[in-house]
Length: 211
Image (cartoon, rainbow, N blue to C red; front, side):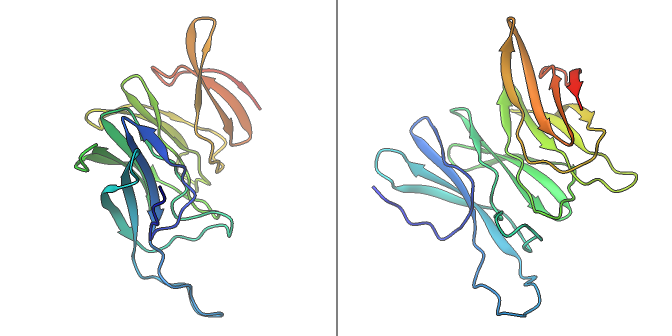
């Protein structure tokens, strides 16, 4: 099967419990050469597709916001969703906020949270990572004076913030953390912001760092 979608983006499709989830941004017509940036709010959309048939089961306009400044090779929907068989989690940029959304498999919004501001000249991409009962997101950013870069974990069910840690180099990066089993214990590794660091994914405690 083949299904055309009206939205563009770099997010990868994810498959869970017979459903395919993917995101996109309905950008509208390209601006004329030499024209000022278009400030018209544009929809960021989550699609749910039946894996077996390609039928569009539902789509949700997650948010509508002006298009942010980005690198020409980036997109306005670059973060891949994450799904656990019951719920699907997506992240988008709503300047100046980074926002996290949770939907059930029927397309109902369960919760939404903002871990904070996000600053980057190249745009946004911070895919959610699922671990046990947590949703973990990377907030590495070009933090101005007085602002923080961060890693944050939310409760998958409620959206309650469970832990937050500072990323001291305060420099943008777009890598999602990856969780490994190391000698029988879980370890979360994140590269970016001028370092590679290991963390305890249950608490956020830093285990080691290489700068």
